[in-house]
Amino acid sequence: MKNLLRKYGRSTTYLLVTDWLILIGSFSVALHFRRYAPGLNIISLQLLHIAVEASFVFVYSLAMLGIFTMLNFYKRKTLLSTVWHFLRIVQGVTVCILGYLLIKILTKSDLLVPSRFVIINWGILLFVALSLHRLIILPIIVKIVSRVQPRRRVIIIGVSENSARIAQQILEQKRYATLNPIGFLSNNRKPGILITDDLACLGPINSLPELVNTHEIEGAIITQTDISYQDLMDLIERCVRFFGWVDVHTDKSAVWHNNLNTDTYFDIPFVRLREIPTGPMIRAYKETTDKLGAAIGLLLLSPLLIATVIAIKLTSPGPIFYTRDRVGKNGKLFTFYKFRSMYTGADQDKTRNADIKEYLESGDQISRKTINISQVTPVGKFIRKWAIDELPQLINVLKGDMSLIGPRPVPLNEYEITDEWHKRRFEIKPGCAGLWKIYASRDGVSFNDTVLYDIYYARNMSPMIDLYIVAMTIWVILTGRADG
Image 1 (cartoon, rainbow, N blue to C red):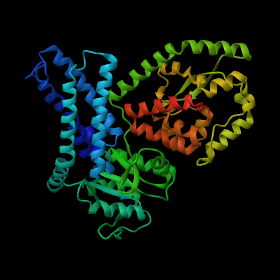
Image 2: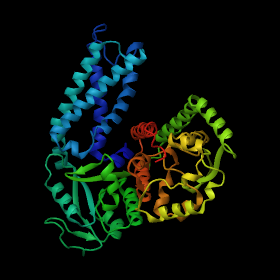
Image 3: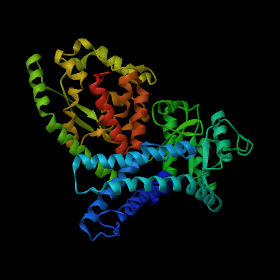
Image 4: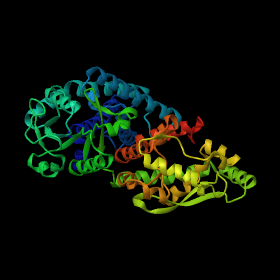
């Protein structure tokens, strides 16, 4: 619970727990009125059918928290708007009940309650309970708690029109007041200088460590604009180490604000970055889904793999597989597998290597994949378009060198010429698919943006974002944009 509070904060942790209890509790009450066993409820676990149904809903409710997260149940922009909050509740209840019915119809499993009367009652009770708690009780609790227990004390790093506006609006906020800005950090203002009518600059940015204890700071909002990528990443890392989270709104993080489902401080978008999850549950989840997904993928796609092997062998001289050392987690080298899609020796093309070097060093320059089309074999053009050349990487996943989702592994020479902050994306395993690929295939993307997407994923990874990436990657492949 302590880690949950540190990661998500008091209000979000409270909502996660109460939403889960409401999902379970409303199902329990619905079971109490089941037609064929009146008087029974979820506590009656000595009856086998009740225990089985309850066990499924126990797990299903945890999955629903992920759906609620995707529906923005825990974002400030939802909590601050009664209308949007109500609409999200309607969406959440609808998805919950329809999802349960769909699983019931498709599986015909004994794990699901057979009575539609119970399911309808569950939906009604869930809607009433969530609406009552979130729209009426929650604001009252927040108001009472804010009087008894101080709001979370946060520091705003950077001075700008937006940072001053954020601070003033938070101070004036009445309905969902959970944060208490206590001042600013800035390298361009002297300590003691008022930034707003109520808040002053407390010192330069590098004074954060000593101010954390002095002022009992519990969080930070980064709005610093005149800052390099390296300094921004160092600052994010420092804040996350101190508080477990940090909110970011800067010109350098614009790619997050523009393309991802970000939250807002009123009308100003921001992203929340957390510690890279390393707990036993996330490790077990990643290892299980990686191994299982890779094994199933290789099995189901084996006819396609065999056909590709034959096509490559018959149409161009050279090996079937392209194998090279690539950089993985924490800079460790591993043997990387792909189907060969180019003529032998194409990776020694000096012009292409120079173009790649220029792209990596340009940072913010928008580009699509750097490749010499004349070096691609006829079969290679086909397998690259539909991402078939990437399928042998499932072997890397089975070996434990890669994950299904993560940053793309890179050759050592490319890794060595990148900046230090670029290397931070490899604090997790590289992957076959990634968040940046979804946007790169559509609009092109700068090298810095690809790294920012990878860093965002590493600090926000979850089953729901993995599911989103997998679904969107499949769409990219089916639309023939995999080699974009």
